[in-house]
Amino acid sequence: MDKILSDARIKQLGDSYPRDLILSQVREQLEKERAAITGGKPPSEYNRIVATVCEQLEQLFQPTLRRVINATGVIIHTNLGRAPLSPETLAAMAAASEGYTNLEFDMESGARGSRHVHMESLLCRLTGAEAGLVVNNNAAAVMLGLTALARRKEVIVSRGQAVEIGGGFRIPDVMRQSGAKLVEVGTTNCTYARDYEQAITERTAALLRVHSSNFRLVGFTADASLEEILEVANRHGLPVLDDLGSGCFLDTSLFGLDREPMVQESVAGGVALTFFSGDKLVGGPQAGIIVGRKEYVDKLKRHPLARAVRIDKTRLAGLAATLRHYLRGEAESKIPVWRMISEPLGEIERRAREWVEAFVGPAEVIEGETMVGGGSLPGGTLPTRVLKIGGGKRDEKMAMELSRRLRERETPVIGRVSENALLLDPRTLLPGEDSFVIEALRGISSGKS
Image 1 (cartoon, rainbow, N blue to C red):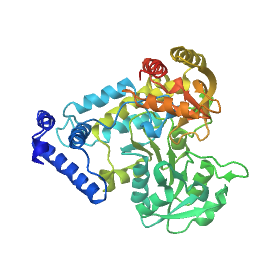
Image 2: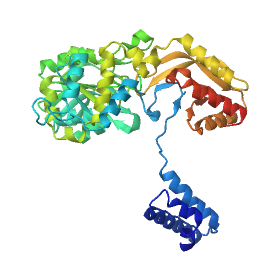
Image 3: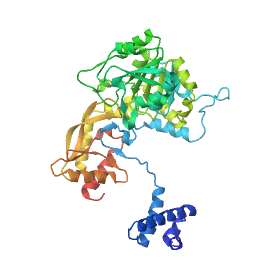
């Protein structure tokens, strides 16, 4: 211990790190060395031990969350942070972070206010709902709704909608945690309005519709429409809860995609509460959004769980800025997700050809498909043009190696390897990021990366 602490390399660490932290790291490393020797491994060289201590301390202060370039061809990529944010959204979040805000302060009265007021009018204007509420994410939104309205009661849902989405989020598990009892009706592939009708008892609290999000059932299928579910619920004086998952304010069919259920349609149909995400097709920061009838939204606001799942000031500011893009009619030009979806194919091909010219070696532009992703539009894709490197029977190792070298750059470029070829899709890049890809392609093809 004394020898290591007196080493010039360790002493130099004292200029950057607290002594207690250095001591702790040295002790930890020596303990690992003792355990390795006890296990029969040869002792490490002294210089290796010192170098390891230095490396681990440096790594401790390096941020693990890094910016990457998404060239995967998946727009809302869950593993890469879902929806990128508009400059206006980022500016609003930064402004809210710089100092104090009126998050829960009524400027007129000088008394305590509510954080809900910063979002509710925007949500009502956009969706036509009577009231709105924002929480941490959509899973929290659904949990809060079920807990506040159906604890120790029954909620009826189609067996074909008792789904699991990404990250192990299962509707039956969420309902169990909320204290609501799940009553499944129909079959996996066929559920009719009469199935809901026959399942209603005096213990029924609500009917729940769940959007399938990331899968599609095909073949012999039947599903009660939202209108049919509402008719059944209205006859029995019950609320309908609508979990849209991704949520959408624009008509996706106008962009050549399958039609995604729109929030406005759910509200207009008479649903009591509609739940959806803020960080998928809405294109904002992570959030769970709840809109609907005031009597039900107010119950959620007053529930103790609402405090546990509430959203912070930075994401409130960012989501508000994102929603204003829709109100101004500028979502396609301002919100990155919608700008990517609406980008002309000719422009994508032009960019892909610039990438080909930057790569020193065999490469070509081919037709491809961009996925929307993020649990949205299952199977929905957009035509695109991608850069393809490799693809021969013996090219798999080469494609994997190029992919690795792109990931190891200072600003990593993330592509995908398919059928022995490295594929890079321009559609999923943000403005200004092409230069990173061009520089990276020149680097990996010249061996300088």
